[in-house]
Structure formats: C-alpha cells, structure tokens
Image (tube, rainbow, N blue to C red; front, side, top):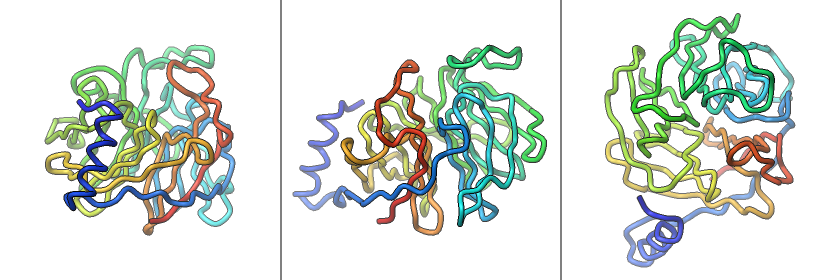
Length: 256
C-alpha cells in the first residue's frame, strides 16, 4: 500500500516518463442541496439520480433537470455509505451502526450490503462484506456488484448471491464512491480528494482527478452518467466528525 506522498510522486514521475496519463483538475459545479443534508451515496440511472443519506438512511430519487424529489424510499440501512441499482433493486451499503441517530433493531453491527425493494424500501436480503470490516462504495456493472472491501484494501466483485468473482488492489486509503467506465472503475479516495481510474482486471492506475480542498467538495458518493461525474459531500469526516467543508450537503458535477 502506497502512502499519499509516494502515490502522488509516482504519478508525477510516470507522467514525465510518458508511462501514465495526466492528472486532471476539473472545474466542479454545485447542482443542488441534498434532501436531508448528508448525502453519502449516489447512483445514476435514466430514471433519475439516486441519493443515499448517511444519517436518515433514506434513498431519494431526484429529477435530473431540477433536483426535485421523485421518490422517497426509507430503508433499513445504517450509516449509509454507498449504493447501487441493479436487477431492479437498490443495494445499500450499511457501514455498521449509525452514530448520529437513535439506534434501530435493524441497524447493522458491522459492514453489510442490503438488497432493497426500490419502491417500498423493504429489505429482501442482507450480505456480509467479504473479509469483514466496513464498506463505503458500491457499483453495479455487467450483472455483478463491486464494493469497497476496506479491511482488505481492495475492490471486490461479487455475483448477485455474493459469491466473490474477482478483486483488485487500491492505491490509497478510504476508498469511497465507484463508477464504471469502459472496463475500468473510477474510485473516490476521500482523504486525498482524488478520483482514480483503475483497470478492472488488475487495479493498474489509468487516470486521476485531483480536487481542490479549498474550493471543491469533500468527495464521498460518486457516479458517472453521460460523460459527466456526479459527486456528493456528506459533511461528515473520519469517526463522525464534522469535515469542515464549505460544500457539505451538496451534490456537484464536473466533466473531463
């Protein structure tokens, strides 16, 4: 596992040697405030943009043009830290028990993924995280689910029954939102405010985005739709502390 300085140095050296593509510094635009103020998961669909709230654990479907709520789906997730939509279901990443609301008997005690009815919010199944530990991001791609298996410091691919199919290493800590892009995966690394494109076969770094900590959101949930990237700032940092971000609670967009 590389530390932050080693990784950034490696990118710079690789660029000079012509071995790696450049690091992008895009202009990020604020779109909307999230419905409940702590968005920690995004999932882009033709129907609208799904937002998973970290404290209320509600999944909202927002209109692409206006950001208005099209559907509100309360779920039994807890400390929601990722979501995906596949096979007609919502997949909610419950990153252990909630730290900011009264406990519920349905709260997870460790990392779990919930298979949820996207109309009613009913929990249809619960799956433990391969290798244990927490989970921050989910992605549905090619009839399978990818998730950030934080204890293993890998992205892990599973089938619909949570049999492990494949996994790849990640170069930095605190992997978060995921997005699919031509047999590769964009992955948010919140601590470093980077979004890195990884080869889905072996984890090789293909491309990177560096956000500006002074002006850009603290990236948590993220997805890619029609060549635009959507990301959200939950306003919550490590161990539940306020992250101090000026854009806390917002949903933003940028293009490369």
